[in-house]
Length: 465
Image: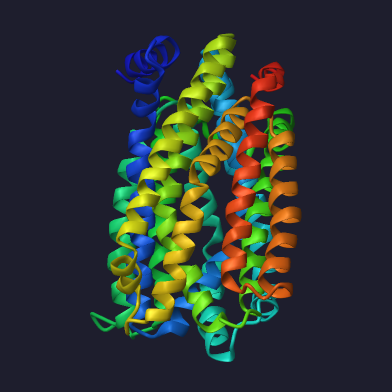
């Protein structure tokens, strides 16, 4: 039964002529999955918002620091997705199992590094951002709990990447639905206190989230080991090192991890710059809220990017080079349309959306947050092209050039431009918004130019089985 389902899905993804339909077949579960994830984040923010504006800033700031560590996960997951997709394209199930098992082992090794480092540096990182003492107290508690739960976050993320690399996007959706229900219930219990559980406030949001990831990781890997799904992971591959496979995963993934690190480190710096502008008191919460809203546009783009990576890897594994390029182009067009339309919706109803997060309505936060949504929305089609075409090339195992593009356009140009406009020229938060939007455009155009050259189609994945 599982074998028949695997063969049918593989044949459809490799042979269906309507690439937009194929993209949607893969992407719609990931889009729903991503929107659920962002929705839960929104609900968390709303729950935490009852504590006050400082609590919102604490969670938003903490998550950006956490993401700097979590991008290391991208290195393993990107390499895993690329290899699983290639092996499925070749119809090499043993190779797919080895790649998946090594992702598990690498996650444990990475956790052993992240947990102590995160616990030792969390307060220093927060102070570096210039947060107030009231925000600091909330954020330190939130981050401490999160870092203890890092292994479960990694294992959940890896399992999702394995399913998606094989072209199975529905199973991780069902797992995430379960996880998000547990997350919301757990957060409510631990934030406000119920059933004899004390009210932990901001820290309660971290406890509920950690509990949900622990359960989802256990369920996900149980399914992968069951042999009833497209990738049949063998237990020996999860604990016995296969250095050739691990090396390939990291060779592909490290540039992607650095690309993600560049993105999140830049956001970290944007917080630091905003904290030093004249309108910082309202600009920081406006940025947190605006970024959270923008996730609703970004996540569908990332979901379509997941479909792009799977299609790219599978088609190259089957030696269908022209189809791999065509799938990248189709997914980029679809993503640009989706991301722009969602951004436009948030601009039109910005006041209602922003006030939703605030316990006490603030005209200043609404005004600055609305301007953020307008300026960023203009560049969303370019942002979509950058994300999705990067994912297309990453699915092929071509990751160094996308990293270089992100590093130059985000870390170098964005930071310098934001500092000049926001601080030196005194445009404050508006200058930061302009810098972010302009560099989205630069990144999108540059990524498309690299994609068109086609060198990404020449990357080889060696046999490990």
